[in-house]
Length: 420
Image 1: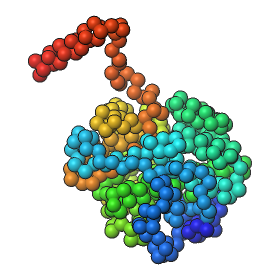
Image 2: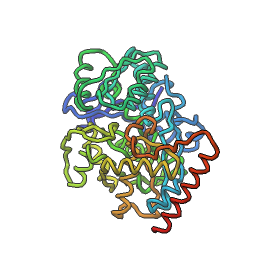
Image 3: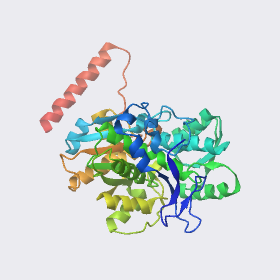
Image 4: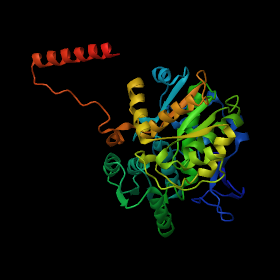
């Protein structure tokens, strides 16, 4: 027996029994999961939670399952570490990386949302799961659906990174590449979902799916000793991760597990697809959809489903938003790799580059406790770095050739010093 109490409309407040429903029948607002916080506060505590498994499932009471999870038992509890060398480069003394680039099984934060939604699909009795995806969700759903013994169908834009297509197809799933951007793929999936009785994890199961993102926030708070950071910089596509980080921290404050939710949230977007950042900078209350044009394909959602709620969370937190060019994205990827040995995908490059701008603007102070959300692995987006990294030196298999190579390097270093 779980502790969720059903669904509630995020716009009008109408309540519903638990079901695979995602929009309000009265106002068409999105639904989200509710819980009995008073009961949870009496029954659980940080001490009881800390005795749970070293995975996202230690927070099971705050997730929308009525029974045990069916997949993803090893998902979550990824490292949070003090990024001293990156902090030196950015001018931050207390900079931390939350690294979901090493998440299990498919190296992105999407493993969290899929573990919840596939488990929920099994509870509801579905035998087929599906999604619209820019890549990471496709990888994770294909892997975890296979582990659960479910049929899966994955709809993707035809131009996403080849590594992500291979990383989905390898599980034997049915992949449908659509000639169009993510927003067009998502619209198609909404039509397909009305025709077929399948569990679309980010459509008719979206209220449950998105709850998995809260565990990202729960882990940050626990790994910091049950406290809230001053700032969290988050890559934004559909805005679900940002809104659920806010919900997760709000829940922890409501339960009394952290003293106060003081975190300021920052949306990081590529300039080629920055509808949320544009709205924040202009003080708009609405999101104006855009046509994506960026190397950060995992963030290429021009009409974010949770955009309005993302704006609300950013403003409630006192945060802001920034966007960065493709060149700055690559610089961000390389800076994180060269300082901390973490290879992130393009979304992580967006986060690092946006943080540099926020620091220069004075929005993040050098002594502030700051967390960067690194949500995916660079092995999936290597194409973006072609030509941006140093090519290997090529020599014959002789000691003489290697010595000559070293001497050449030393001469260049001396010349650079003299020129400097």
